[in-house]
Image (cartoon, rainbow, N blue to C red; front, side, top):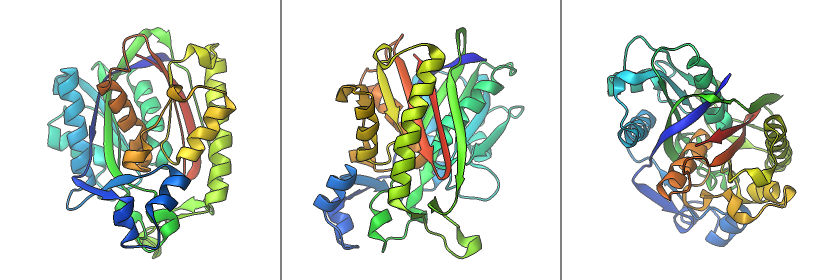
Length: 312
């Protein structure tokens, strides 16, 4: 399989900004309690916005930045665990709202917080066959609708947002990626309204152990496949779940802090949206110049996990 190359990024966030002090007014917590345990200082919550609206904004942002015509998009894939509708998919709504071609696949993937990585890999596979050169890949979440605001162990962690990338095949490079699943619905999940329990539940210690082990191993496996070392990579972008998890992985590699990009303090855990939002910020800061190598790595409920090597 040929590698995928990201040629444009975009993001969208709800207007409502919620600080840790704001959270302390609705649940027994404090800025010190949240920030020292997670690194989170604020997050964005939807206040009237729909998840698909955020996704469309992020997609438009990426299309405009990349100067890509709608007719050139050959696939739309959205990583999300919080769609507005059971059906149609978020991807179908984006196709309709943006007026994208009708003879292209458009669908969602639910791999929880690994959703963007899964979607990116699937989109890369589709581009091997599609006549149109580009795919639109998103991570978009509205976790505030699935969060119990009386449970201080979870409600302070999550935020809403969307990130989008436009990719094309890079026939001069080989694809390097790993992914997998370790079934465990007991430790992290969200039964939803159908089962009478709409909120996210989590066994924090189990999730921490899984995340640190599997994200570290996933980075190692991708580097081994590519015959690279961490010194050959410019940045590692982890799913922004918890600063302690990211720091644990970084210390496993004895890597300098600047190599592991972090923005969790501003957005909290936005699930599948966290990596594309981070990539967009890096792009805006001029960090993703041509030739830069970036490893993205994530984990999510399921448990799911995955990692990819990207070259810009």
